[in-house]
Length: 245
Length: 261
Image 1 (spheres, each protein chain N blue to C red):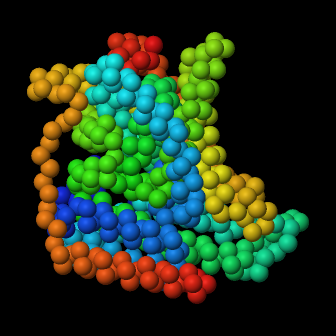
Image 2: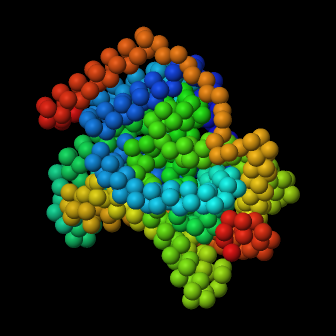
Image 3: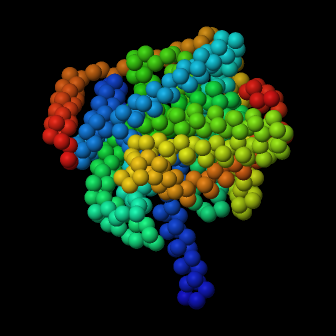
């Protein structure tokens, strides 16, 4: 075996091992059974007003226009699928988009709250991302806080006439970061630090998840911007039908 | 692409009444998080594991692989609970950095281990449900629990369309790969965006076609599907009841005795 071949084999081995152990960096779904009972219930109750509003809104839309039913269903499935697709990333790790930013921009935050909770139930049952007991907490951070914040940033930038690409980038990545902050605070509230209480604990959770979440937010922002620009340039009628333009 | 969804159709426990399985896993899950005890966690892990792998005939290797899905979250999250940064060292370990210590207490370590066990046991309950019950059966259980019909309808359609859209996405990805669309990060980004946007367009078009097809078949707001109900077996009910009563008794004993384990 020549020196070159040996080097190649070593490189391939290192590469394959790195890929083999590289874990999927998902969005921060709080795992099943991770939160104490009181917190599970409290976050669930906190979600209720948003869900009821979303439900009413969907019902009203459906009474006006029956066709919206299949469109909503497809939108939900679309959000699920983009959150389960592996995205290309520079480091070669296999991460997933969260899809909350794109969902909020395309379908509006109210319908995303209802669709988001259904998507979270499916993610728990089909993929074991998140869980049934942590559904309330996850719904609050990913189906409510993230989309609403994303949409707020989007609306604000649109009002200030910021460049389209930058608007979408900011909306998606800041929405992502906000979700990650909310989840960290949720964890910190449930598990305050022995030295320094809730605040210190929040800092710990934020810093522990930062290496996976910060690059993800940037990548998600870039991809969402590219997707929205792509859609705007050749999917005008479809965008109109989901109420985007 | 979605492994656990395929596996549940092969499960030998698939034809057991879905309400039984749902109640079993939800009650056991609740016992897990109520007690947060290591003994209960191991008991639950063993019971649900045996039921899924031995009774349900789900391959062990697959089961283990699926159990490691949330491992990153578990590792990172628990690390944040173990480790503290403070000016005074705690009793388990302490590494000085400048005037601060990276430190942890025995209590904290114990809580961390407790949490890992509880979380894994709870995940195994969730897997018991999802590896042995197809989603459509779970939806039937939710219907019995009086979840609004609109939500159930939406869930059924979403579930169906997840697979249609995944199929679209993977077809496009295959053809992009075969044309070297993902050869460099820059082209990969472009291909990904193109793929997602064409999936979006195709799905919106599909939704219109779906509605037309439904309307042609007299759709008036509810999908009428025949639901197969599998008979409830007395022996199963009795064994589930016995297990849950014992489990909850153990939970109460542990809670009353102070809950150190």
